[in-house]
Every structure is written in structure tokens, then in C-alpha cells.
Length: 316
Image (cartoon, rainbow, N blue to C red; front, side, top):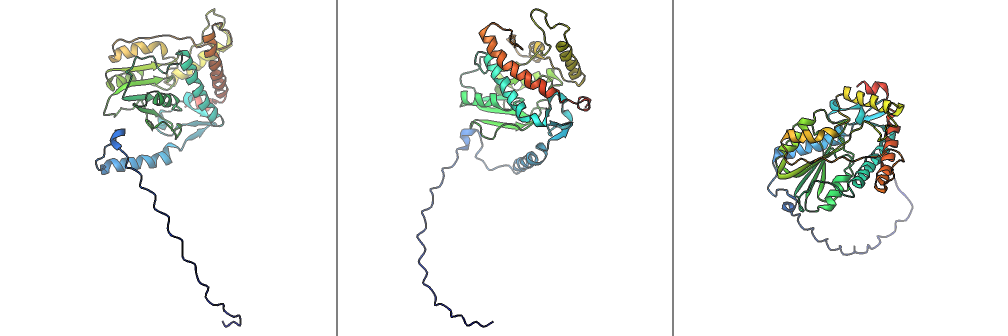
């Protein structure tokens, strides 16, 4: 189509500014420093890792919701109604787990462990790591150690110390670790384990000679020094919950049995220590009061979540 509009002459184009100098190349990562082989990868292994990554994005994070409660998707058939969490309380449940961590460090006089592990351990395993807070604290305290935390549910943070990593795994499955650990840590797995003797034996088989395994767990049968809650409704409620958990195949009171489990597994020089965890405002001892503050908050969140444990969920 013709046009009467005059066409302007070509306008000179200014030359482009010189290109910025290329950024210096990043130094190569010293994989050996982190225990990673510099040899070419095995194709089968690479395929397995790729498959695992895809699985983590699609299956493991595809949580199951029933009766308003969220269950882990990995190893779904092994789930326990007592280790699920109400969906609308998920953040509070993670906070509760961190509160239990604080309560435990206070109980242990600000220590992360009681086992006399080496000053420079190389490999540490945290079973049922939860939010990963203990593993991260240990990673900061032992910067030369390789910390591995595992759990059925990937709720751990993405930003962690460089020597800490997490994996989705079932501690009751056959362990496939090829190198032993200097220290294995297992804390608060009540209501989560079906076979404690087998777990103890796997810990023994994967602890380095001269290394340590440490279990910390509850006896969740509520009692009082003066018998003031004996046969009271709160004790009856708690024991009904304990019986329900046992019927589901999970032991809510493994604490008193841990010493014998470890001895039967083959461990030597087994040492057991019992700590009081107060619930309520009764303690006069200042150190017990510090435990009590965190214990009360833990119990408050725990009972609030337990209200949402519907009968249909308990019957699973």
C-alpha cells in the first residue's frame, strides 16, 4: 500500500559500548575435602540419584491428609497415627519439636550428648532427625565431622551447615551404609519404632569399634512423686493413650528398656541415667524449673494436637 508520508533518512547508529570483562572463573571444588570421589560418576549411580531427586519432588512430598491430619508419604504403610500431625498445626508441631530439643539441652546441662565421643569425630548419624536442629547444632560444634540426619518426612531446612546433610529414610529398614559411624544418636522415637531390639542391633553393626551409640527416650507413663495424680482423670487419659499406641504396635515408653536393648545388641560399658521432666509448676529446683518451662509448652502443644486425633485415624 502506497503512502504519501515522507520517509526520514537513515539515522546514524552509535557504536555499542565495549563488552564488560568476563568474570573470573570460580575455583574448582575440592571434592575430596568433602569425601566425594573425583572419579567419573557411575551411570547406574547417577541414574539412581536422578530417580531419587524426582521421587523426592513428586512422591515423598505428596503427603496424605486424612481426618485433617498429615502423614508422611514415604513408606506410607509404616505410618503411625500417633506420629502424624494436624495439618493446621504443622508449624506449631515443628516448633514443639524444637522446644523438646531445648528442653533436652537444658536437662543435659547445655550439652548435646552425654557419650564421651572423640574430640574430632568423623561420621555422626542422627536417627529420626525431625527438624534437624540437633544435627545442625552438632555440625556447628564439630565442623570437621560429617553429619547425616534421616527421617521419614523431609521437614528439615534447606540452609544448613556445610557438613550437615539430610536424607529421607526409614530407620527400621535394612541399613545400607558402607562405612561405620563414630557416633549414632537416637532421640525421642517413642511411638515410632516397632522393633527396638532390631534397631539397637543395626546401630551396633554400624558403630565403629570404640565408637558410641546414644539413645534418649521417654517413659510417657505420667506419675507424681507424692502420688497426687494416681487414678486421676489425667492419668487415666494418658494410660488410655498408651494402650492405644501399644495396640498400634508402637511403644510409647521405651526409655526404661533402652539399657537392656543396647546390652542385648552387643554394646559394652552401657551406662543409663534417668532424668525427671516436670509437667506443671511444682518444682522448687531452679534447674527443674527451666526444664518445666519447656516441658509445659511441649505438653500444651501436644495435648492441643491430640484433640484432633479422630477415631477414624486411631483405627488405622
